[in-house]
Image (cartoon, rainbow, N blue to C red; front, side, top):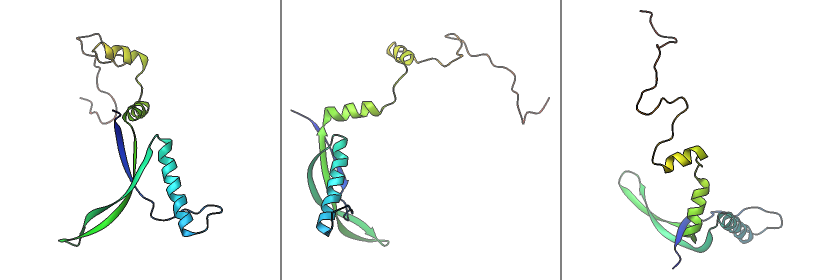
Length: 130
């Protein structure tokens, strides 16, 4: 069974102007097409549009219900893991080999294991001569 992850994004509220697109309905359809193509570039497949109630506060104690329109997309879970891996920073080769050994990578100038780095006198501004 294939696993999916889902993503809901707000549906466009108004149309987008474009050459040759003149009517309100055509502009709105163009805006939807742009939103869907943008998500498809990241591997998301359009699934459906939903209208859902959303309770909002009005004033100090009042509440009102509005309706929000969302576009629902999905993509196979494996693609999501690959996309996340591509976004994660890569470890340098020397860090990767050390981290697999179970030890933390060392900083440049670290002293040998079990000894503290050498400390010198504090210098610089704001230090009183004593």
